[in-house]
Length: 446
Image 1: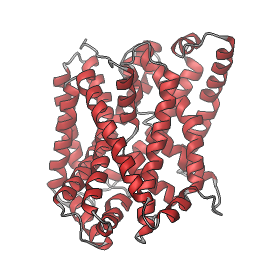
Image 2: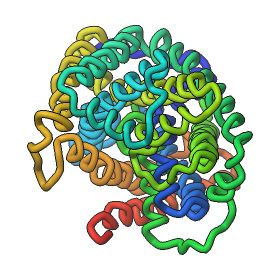
Image 3: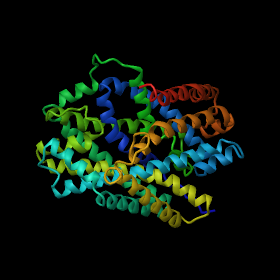
Image 4: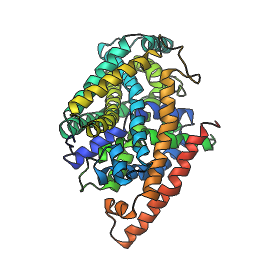
């Protein structure tokens, strides 16, 4: 079997796992989800979902990974050999594979916008012209493919270096860069004339009704943002040492993940309100609306460069973690060197990612269930595979896994801690499955 690595420090563990969780879900998806769901109401529901469902589910993946020190499939083979539970591991690898096949395309988009910002060619247009620019770029045959190839090469190059020299060291550099950039951009936005309107939109209770779907959207965003149900957290935690406190680490990641999402909104909404744009722009908010905002800002070139650098780092670290799920499985299952498995997996992503990219151009009329290839992959992963994976992992740890293993991994010793363990098991058995099951079912009734 190919040799396994491990993280060298607690800071490295935190940065790597935060890098896995913090991605486009925080900076791209959260703000437009918040805008579409009334602002403050969605934020409140999101906080509840992160800590009462996201943290327990994250801890469940950490328990599985750290106890077995195996990849997502090997972990379930070790804990429940010759049972159908092994399928949960395969589901995680498959989910990661599907996500990677379109996530490399979107990460390529962020690289394109970073390039346009650095060269100064992004500024000077209108909102309509930026919408046309994005559509023309996405529909181009070769440029998005070239960019996704660059992204795959960078990612596989990092993975070839291993867990410590690759994933950990890169995360320890990129994540602090991301946090510093976030803070600088947020401070600048909060000093704008329309900042108060943006802050009111985010934090002041409004008359908007909190519906079941607001809560379900928040729960779905929490699982998407925290990378739950795709095997990434199981794989990363398999590199944890025994001195890593699982509860503390999961809570820290949840807090940082939440802060990144909120601070990203602090960047976007004050700027949007200052320059009269509409916040309810959906996924196009980052690629179609913000360029017009940067155009109207003083030293807009600098702010656009910093923002799209931030977006690229967030996308790259998440793509890195998801790709590691597939590479770790291939390396350990087929006894391959990391170099070999990275090249093979990278080549597959380039081929399928290219087809996915072409669904915006030459293959745009190729549809299944009235969805393009890109839309189908996104829907399959976000709306079906992630919720199902999250539920099954929670049910496995809550009902199937030996309670002694859970207690051992969580370092439960005192009677008070055992009472808290019972509460935690209750959440895994009932709260998480029912809520995430609701997220899954809601798509058929919305």
